[in-house]
Image 1 (cartoon, one colour):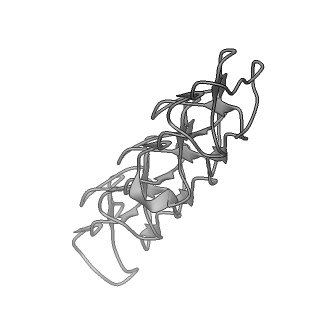
Image 2 (cartoon, one colour):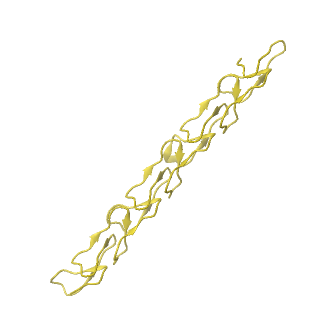
Image 3 (cartoon, helix red, strand yellow):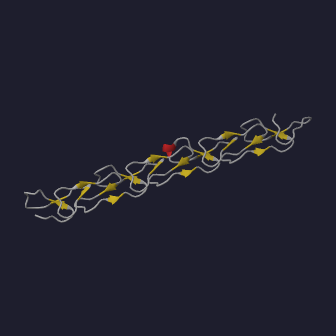
Length: 176
């Protein structure tokens, strides 16, 4: 018997059997073919469908699974790839996004970036925050440190500049 696409039959059989999920067949097939990793099919399929970006599948899959936060995949992937430090991805992403300046990410599976604390700063795509040197300060989430004004000072990693006491002086950006 000659079977339609999506079904198969042994040479000696008189009926056709529908291909199971994760397999497909062409017209006249004597067996069903497994879908490759990154593809999937329903029962009775005539071809495998490609998984969208942000999803993946192993061989012989009936559906695609969503990549978790902190990972991504391109269309047709057999696995998800972990984002590099300094970037993030929400669940189902087809690419990672670099952290904005003033934020960092060193835990790529967390799926987000965190603000740098006051007295530190970061540039775009940072895996860590950098300490503001003495004579400079920053607010939380800063992309750069600000120089203390004349008559004020700060220690390293400061959130504020402190006014000099009477009888003392500091030039702009001076440490204590």
